[in-house]
Structure formats: structure tokens, C-alpha cells
Image 1 (cartoon, rainbow, N blue to C red):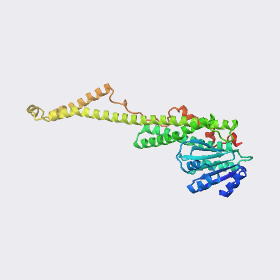
Image 2: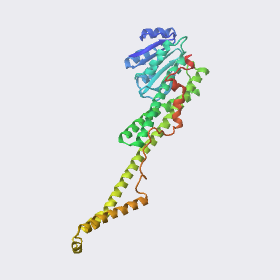
Image 3: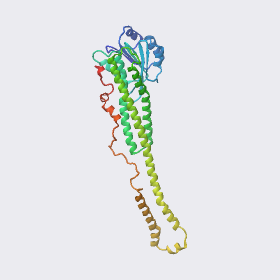
Image 4: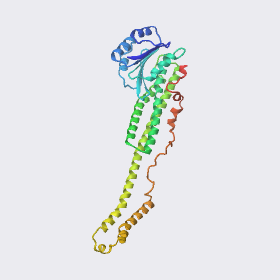
Amino acid sequence: MNGHLITVDGQSHEITPESLKGLIDSSARFWLDLDGLDHATADSLLHRTFGFHPLAVEDAEHFGQRPKVDTYDGYALIVVFGATDDGNLVEVHCFYTANYLVTVHHDPCSNLKTLAERLKQLPGPRPDHVMLLYRVIDILVDGFFPVLARLDDQIDELEDDILQRPTDEQLGRLFDMKRSLISMRKVVTPQRDMFVTLLSGGYELPGMTPEAERYFRDLYDHLIRISDLVDSYRDLMSGALDTHLSTVSNRLNVVMKQLTIIATVFLPLSFLTGFFGQNFGWMVAHLTSLPVFVFVGIGLQLFTVGLLVMFFRQRGWLGSEGTVPAATPGQRPPVHPARRWHVLHPRHRAGTGAATAADR
């Protein structure tokens, strides 16, 4: 079992049932983060040491749940999601009480490690229990913004590639990104709705104050923006998919038109070749010299091809019409309004988990 135990003075402690029992008995404020939890450890620490309800402990052992808040006597179980640097979703179960916070996750979470190091180096008193909960959820939620920023760049690049040369590999990339957005939307939307219920008084968290509610409303605002970005990028990828199919269809139409023109050119030539290839007595008797053969056999065919070319040009069937223009290098389409936010957002400019008023 990996993790860290940080007390209010910023000191790290060894994770043992004895040390935890001593901190609980002394009503000390601390944060315990557990990375990976088996059944024996869950029963030993969460149930026997902390006294959490068996249903809450069972939830901590089984991941893949929706974001939710379950309230018990004196504490609450909060399931929240974040995103890691590589774009994977991380599910964190938070046992929140009036004195301490216990977070459990199966997958490594670099954001929580960063927060732990930041708390150790933070001068002055550490955040109280409710602000510590805010800090944990905040750094998890802010992890979505770099992932969405990279996804935005990938969509831009993919759109340019599709306009220049559509391939089957691009379809695979489109579907992979779309699956990633769908997975993200499945957790962001219920997490946003969870904060609506929390801020409207549907859940009672120990130590929640009007000042703390302002910070949690800021989290709710972030989730709204993330949800809007996810929906916008889904629409953009649907548009890119339509563009890919339209571009392939247009190029196929151009090829079919070119083949049709070639077949049309050879149609009168085949007729002339077949006609003069017949064994007519008059032709055998009169087409006896080379000039006559060149004039009738070759000149007539060239004249026919020339007439067809003039006809095709008059109808606009020759030239660049109907071809798919390639994208000009360096030329970028107008930026979608929803794509500008993550560039303008001050936290995104400062990086994941930038300092907030709570840090000070």
C-alpha cells in the first residue's frame, strides 16, 4: 500500500494503525492519501481504525462508480474524478470528516502527489479540513484543462490533415478522441450536477461555511466550462468526421469524372477503329497511299478528340472545377469561441493547480 500521511503542521508520518489511532484520539487534523487498497487493508484501516460504515468501505474497494456524495453520521463519502497528465481518468474516493480527510484511489495520481508536496512546503498554518477538501477536488478538476488543450491541438492538426489528404488512419484517430471525450463527459456531467445539489443544500458537509461555499462555487464554474468544452469538441470532431467523408466522396467523384472523360474520348476512337478495320471493298481499292491513310486513319481520330475536348471545356468538365482544394500551409480556420477559454483562463496559463486564495 502506497500513500502519504500529512498532519496540520506539514509533517509526514508513517502510515500505521497505531499512528492513525493516536491522531484520531487527539482530534488532530491530517490528510491520509492511499494509493491502492486491498480488502484486508480496507477492513483494517477504514473500518476498524476510522470506524467508517461497511457500505462506505465497500464503495472504497469497488471503483468505476459515478460521482456522488453519501452522508453518514459525522462524515461523508465523496466520489470525484480528475484527469492525469497522460489523459487517463482517475477516480478518487474522499472520506471527509470534521478533523481529517482520507482519499483512496487505485491508479497513481500525480496531481495529488503535487498537492502533498505543496502542503509540506506551505508556510504558515495549513488549510482547515473543508479547504483541504476543496484543494483536493480543485487540483483533480483542473487536471482536465491540459488534457482538453492537447485535444484541441490534435483536432486542429487533424482537420488540416483531412483537408490535405484524408486517410483511414485519421478515422481511427477521430474515433479514439471521440471515445475519450465520451468517457470524460460521463464523469464531468454527473460531477457538475453533484455540485449543484451540494451548493443548494442537498448535502450537509461538516464545517461548510459561506466563505468555503465561494470556493466550491468556483469549482462548479470550472466544471461548467469543462462540460461546455467537451460538448464543443464533440461537435468539432463530428464536423471533422463529416469533412473527412465529404472530402473522400468529392475526391471519388473527381476520379469518376476523369475516368468518364477518358472513356468518352475512347468511345468514338473505338468506333472509328472498328469501322475502318472492316474489310470493305471500296476502302481496299481507294485507301492505298500513305497520305490518305494518315488523313483518314489518324487525322480523323485527332479531329474527333479535338472536338470532344472543345465540348468538354465549353461545358466546364475540364479544369480545376470539382476538385477539392488543398489547405494552404500555415492557414488556420477561425478559432471556435469555446476553444479560446482554456488559453485565456488564468489557471491554465499558470499551470495545473495554480495558487489560489486558499493557498494564502
